[in-house]
Each structure stands twice: as structure tokens, then as C-alpha cells.
Amino acid sequence: MIGKIQKRLPIVTVSPVELSSRVIDSGEHDEAVNRVTDQVCELADGISIVESFSHVISFETDDGLVCFDTSGHPKGPAVVEALRTWSTDPVTAIIYTHGHVDHVGGSGAFAAHAQANGHAAPKVIGHEAIIPRFERYRATNGYNIEINQRQFGGVSKRTGLAVGGGRQFLHDDVLWPTDEFRQDLTVDVGGVSFEMHHAKGETDDHLWSWIPEHRAICVGDLVTWVFPNCGNPQKVQRYPLEWAQALREMMTYNADWMFPAHGLPVYGSARVNRVLDDLATALEVLTSATVEMMNAGESLDAIIHSVSVPDDLISRPWMQPVYDEPEFVVRNLWRLYGGWWDKNPANLKPAPEAVFAAEVVALAGGVDAMVERAHEVAAAGDLRLACQLIELAVQAEPESVHAHGARAEIYQVRRDGEFSLMAKGIFAGAVNESKALANGDG
Image 1 (cartoon, helix red, strand yellow):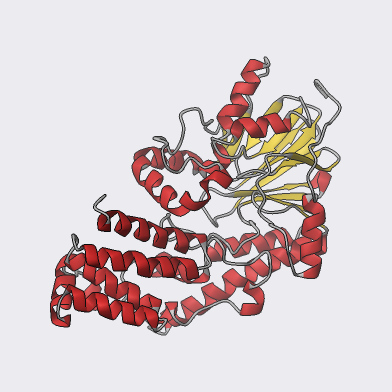
Image 2: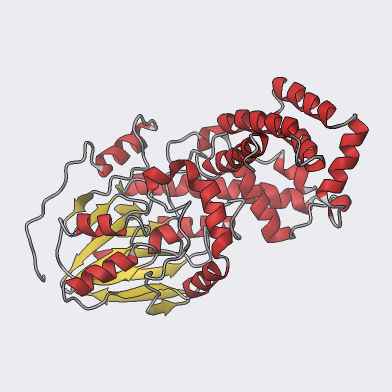
């Protein structure tokens, strides 16, 4: 080993392994399972985790450290500092589980530390689709900043994501892959083998890795201790069935360790396979039920309001839809297998939304009548319909203070009653937009 020092581990109230074992064995949890401590913890001899957004999993080898992911750009320096209290060995290789910015954004801090300490720059290993992803991020910089501000605006302080004021979605100092692969790749570093496998799931550039010397799998975001991020309404295509197939393949290894990029590390093959099986089952249920209804000629609307995941499955602590949710996955499945048309012929080439809204609002007796009805429907508990009605009101009269005031109120109630971060973020965005217009700040 190079530059070995005695390890000084910051104190964490409960070790992540102890917590995950307790939660999986009991099926209950009274502590957060997605933690952002920016502290390092040694999980086993030669393996550490820095719990951040996202985590960094590091392996000691005779030729230096191999790190899975680098966390996000704002977290990079803190992650490197924490890692260096565990080992001062050079970082020989960084493996990107996928190209999301909360996994690659901190790489500039790793490179800067290497340069400052006279170490060679780490090689960066990733799937060949990461570079096209980075290029797309550059081309859609403004859009990605906007949607991440809406999606993560309420949790940016906790996660450290630069969701509001930053001008760059993918920062200039992010390291691009130096070593790419298409399907499978095995890399031996200092006596430790890293077997990487491509798996479409949350992204088209995802990988998971089997490390046989430790009987461990690094799974990136294929496991995140929440319901799978497989339906995100503001992001590009996800792949539910391929995701489930990757989870099933992981189960064949009977790994002793599983290291996700969010959530808790898992120890014990029975626990690992239980989590993998639950996630795979949920995605398989949604896929088979959706495709069955598509084959039967059902519309997207019918499928959305019919297909779900059993309550006993989705209520488990590692399965709860606090980020993404099954309804959004159904929409993604429709897009993947059936295109964007929802089978309503009026939606194929519709009138502009404002024109349609003005006609409906006029038939209803004007904006005030529509606002009143939206309030009545909301009070009766049908927030889905209430939101549709109030949208018609503001589309018909975009400058109406009355309509926007009601819209802010109705969407606030809707936001407060939602479970997933994605739904909360979008509805909160509507609240903020209408509050600004109602107050004359728009």
C-alpha cells in the first residue's frame, strides 16, 4: 500500500450496516435509511463508504483505491476529505455506475486532490453511453437546471445539489470516461477483480459490478432504498423490465455484500436477495399488468387508474414511493412500448391548450364559476379533478389574480397530500408560480 495511515473514523450514531440489518430483519424503521452524513465508515476490511448524495464506495488494492462514483459537484471536496481520513492511497480508478450528475459531479475534486498530492490522474471507467449522456446534458443545460430545481428544490440543502443558482448542470471539471465498455468488462487492480455488467434500468448507461474477492456487488442506483426511480416524469426513458432482469441476475451471485449508491449497505446473502427480489417483483408486476392491458386494447388512461403494486410490497422500508411512484412507471412503460399517443383521438392533434380552456371556461359560465367549482371539488376530496379544473381557469385567463390565488391554494393541498418527491416538486412548482402571479411578482 502507498502512504498508509492509521484510520480515524468519524463517529456515526448507528453504523449503516447495523441499521440496514435491523430494518430488513424487522421490516420496520424509525430512522432515516437514506442518509447524507459526508462521513466515512469502514464496512469491512478494505472497504469503506462515504455516505453522501450519492455515496462513494471505495476498495483498497495493492495499487491504490478503486472508488465507485464521486458524489455530486458541491459534495466532492467534503467526500474527498472524509475519504482521506480512511486512506491516503492514491485513487487509481473511478468507476461510474452511471452518468447522473450526483454520481459524477464530484470527480473534479478527486482530480484536484490527485494533482495537489503528486498522484497520477485516476482512470475513469464507465459504459460507452455515458459520453453521449454528457453531450446531451451540455445541449440541454437550461432545461436540466430548471427541472432539477423543481424536483429537488425542497431538499437541496440536505443533498447539496446545486439546483437553483448554478449555471452549469454538468460542470466543466467533471472527468469524462477514459475506459469505456459496451456489455461486460473485468478489470484487475492490485489483486482485486471488478467485473462490470451493463444493465439498462434507471438509465441506459448503468452498470453493476461483482467483486469476487469480497463477495460484493456495487449496484449504483439499481437499488436506492426507495421505490425504483423508473418513471420520472421529467426525465428521459427508463427501462423497468430490463431493470428487473438485472436484479434477478444479481441474485444468482448470492452476494454477502450489496453496496447501493443511495440508502444503506446490506450484509448477508439472505438480506441482499430479499431486497433484490422485492424490487424486481414490483417492476415485473407493473410491466406484466401494463403490457397485458395494452395488448387488450386499453387506453393509457384506463391503465394508469388500474395498475398498481400490492400494498404489502410497496410498504416495506426499502420499497416506499417517496421519490418515484408506480403510476409514473406505468406511463414510462406506455412510452417505451407504445409511443406517446394515449389512444384518445382528440389528443393526437389537439387545439392549443389556451384555446380549449377558454372554450370550456366560457361554457362553464366564466373563470369565476370555474374557480368556484374547482374549490368545491377540492373540498369534496377529488384533488385530481380540482387541479384539472383550476388549470383550465388559468389557461383561459393567464393574468387572473383570482384564478392563480385559487390555483396556489389547491396545489398546496395537493402537494401536502402527496408521497413522492417528484409529485411534491411539480405541485410545489405550480404553487410558487401562481403565488408570484397572484402577488404581482410574475
